[in-house]
Image 1 (cartoon, rainbow, N blue to C red):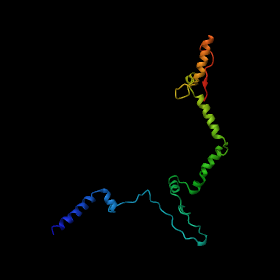
Image 2: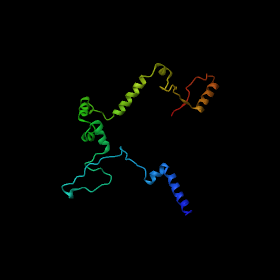
Image 3: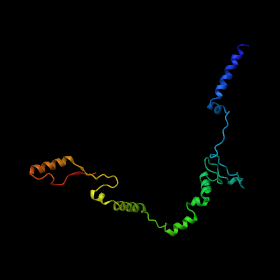
Image 4: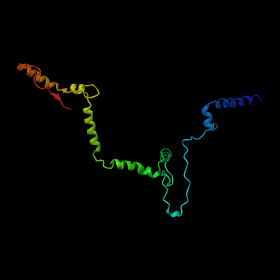
Length: 176
């Protein structure tokens, strides 16, 4: 009888200690878990077709024909769009406004034209100080040319040997 009590106390004590741990309850299935209310998606009701021979073969992962994707349902709920408007991309009102604005007459090279116009505007908006100091806009750095050291040394040497000033002649640069 004396050996039965310690043999019973050890499992009971360990069970008591383990139930205090949070992870043990979930792993043993003792903790209550509620479903994620945002992950719940209602399904469209099943329909029985008139003729079973016209059924297409099942394709895994494809939505049912009567079902909309959750994204389309959310857009319809929030913005009030219908599935027809979603497929066309624009509503009837938006199409009317775009038609009146002449949005259908967009040239093919519109991006190139917009980039060119933006570059012209950026050049015209440079301050007088930027234009005079030849700064490359915004960064405050002066535009620089990389001097070709070997050709510059030869030019300076020729100027010194011939008695000309060192500032005479064009400074050779390395073109990128």
